[in-house]
Image (cartoon, rainbow, N blue to C red; front, side):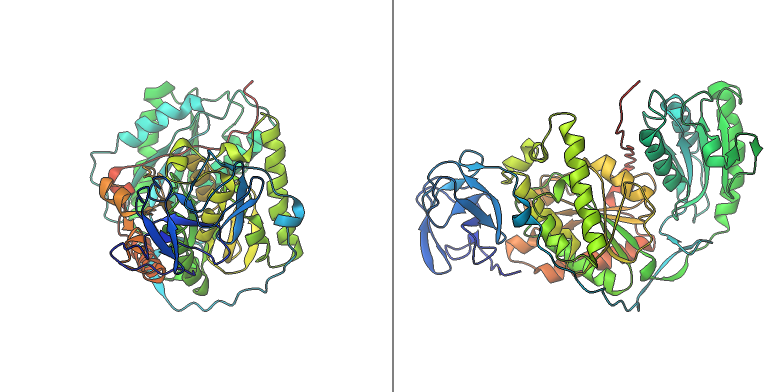
Amino acid sequence: MLYEIDSPPTPDNSAILLHPSDSVAIARVPIPAGQTLYINGQPVTARALIPAGHKMAIRAIAPGEAVHRYGNIIGFATAPIAIGDHIHTHNLGYQELNANEIHPEFVAPRSTKHATANFHGYARPDGRAGTRNYIAVVAASNCAAHTSELIAESFANETLPPNVDGIVAFPHGEGCGQAMGPDTEQLQRTLEGVLDHPNISAALILGLGCEVNQIDHYLGRSSNGAKGAPAGLQGMTLQQSGGTLGTLEAARKNIRQYIERAASEKRTEIPLSKIVLGLNCGGSDSFSGITANPALGYCCDLLVAQGGTAVLAETTEIFGAEHLLLRRARNPQVAQKLLACIENYKRYLRQFGGSFNDNPSPGNKEGGLTNILEKSLGAVAKAGTTPLEDVYFYSERVISPGFVFMDTPGYDPVSLTGLAAGGCNLIAFTTGRGSAIGFPSIPVLKIASNTNTYKRMTGNMDINAGRIADGAATIEQIGQEIFDSLTRIASGERTLAEKLGHHEFAPWRIGPVL
């Protein structure tokens, strides 16, 4: 990064210039009207209150002229902007950039990986590694959701063996009243990824019996007979097992056998190359792209150097910044797969009259993010600097080491679900406004982008990247802290989301309700 921050705030460092070509500086602290700052040695007087994280013009900008942050276009002036003006939704407009502006041709070389570090995890027969050891009860449809929760809750007060992390339910509202084509196939792929996950020792797939999403799909049964369920997976339906109470009793017997099996599985020393780290941001603010996201990006570079995998997601939050990822594509085919994700999402949005710019929430905007272009430019910093090795569909099994991308919505619970189903065994989640979310079977590390949010939500935030904006730490220092914390978490240390019992799970419903 081009900026350095000293502490405490002074007229020389109260606003951050992120790139020499930028037309805005970012208020590190609230800047009252009339206060004069020095940016690159030049005086700039605020013409209005500039809230922390918001943009102040450092040169005059004419209507229709592009406004730059991070050295990239974040929109176009809708009114004359004077030096010192507050720039936000009242004078900065959004429009899609054309292909020549956002699709430069560049092919990056394949990255070199050298694994040397280890963590203590669960080695699985297929070569993957678990950071946790759960038994899963997965509902095939909404009709089995309540019973799946009852089954998991029935073990809540029981003492489990030390290396059995728990029995977790995966209830959801899908699985019936939907078309048999791509929508059901995506749900099946998602639930398969949850059932056959390195953090799951054994699992139960639970159906009502008459839903669209039949449990036979998961048990390997053909239409003319059974060929046997995969090891560590059983299935049952409420209609064949005595209803809710009969199914609860039968499931508890099966799960007790699973507990004995899981108790025999021990943590062993495993290379960090087995880590598949999902990346997500939610409740972002302007500081997210200055502190937490670039620090997480530095962590990802460290992980990739160990042979591990970092999975960027949220297609709606790379739009307007995809050129930064295309420059890193390993080959033209990978670049085209990424562009296809963008184009497919455009068609998806057009069905509902939507736009990528519908993504920034009221909280995002209050935190200084004016539109999706600005939000995306900060969001892609999570991915570090290494080559883009591959692109995956939602919930598709991730098999490529290095930095990869998964096509998901920006909506956090749906994005996390896709990452989990793809095989991520850790998730790092940055937030500026504050987010309370987790996942049933995967540790989710929360990284606050500013100290105010960290202090307000100390029970939710694991790491305070706001220390970068405070001048108390560097991006590299916080990135190393994230990396070290993730290594400990992979070996069993609990995140705050785990301690709070967060179990958010939401498959992506893409089709009509029938």
